[in-house]
Length: 203
Image 1 (cartoon, one colour):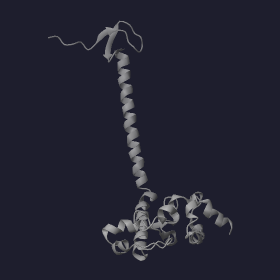
Image 2 (tube, rainbow, N blue to C red; image 1 turned 180 degrees about the horizontal axis):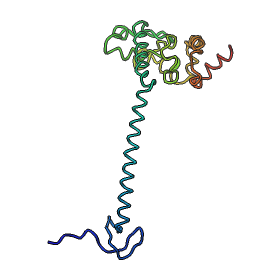
Image 3 (cartoon, rainbow, N blue to C red; image 1 turned 60 degrees about the vertical axis):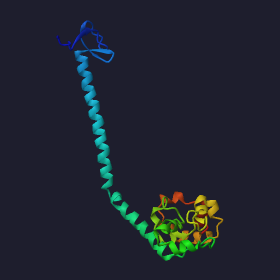
Image 4 (cartoon, rainbow, N blue to C red; image 1 turned 60 degrees about the horizontal axis):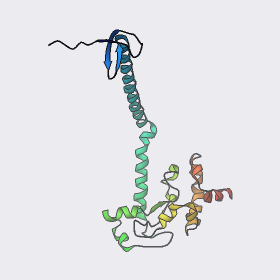
């Protein structure tokens, strides 16, 4: 049995060389020289992709080792302490409407009630926008959530600042905000709602 020849005679699809040794790749014919160039370019392209992937991994590792990356777990730990301290100290009673819940009062320390009780610990200024004061003692109130079965004041407060400004606790929110305002970073100040910003402008 004779071996199938590696090369055929034909016209190159790239350099247009005629009646020369060619290699068929899919439906195209390439002369030996062009075929070698194509293989070289393919290898270079694959190497670039590998290098790019390595660079991404290197950057991610670098970020993880930065000061911010090291501090992140501490921030989460501080927030956990903030929630835990409030959940141990505060009374199961909505500070806006006065609603109470017998079941939650008696089960807030148990596994079945902890998550519901935690949902009643409201940030007056949202932690996602105000990292500088997210664990400040004045930045929290007990507001019942619909999930907890206490009431819906937490949900209403978070729904819109227009709604929050009409709630019974608003005067206290403004008082606390004025105390915490100097601690808010310049970058975070863009998130301060007009309802609170106008209070600062009146000082």
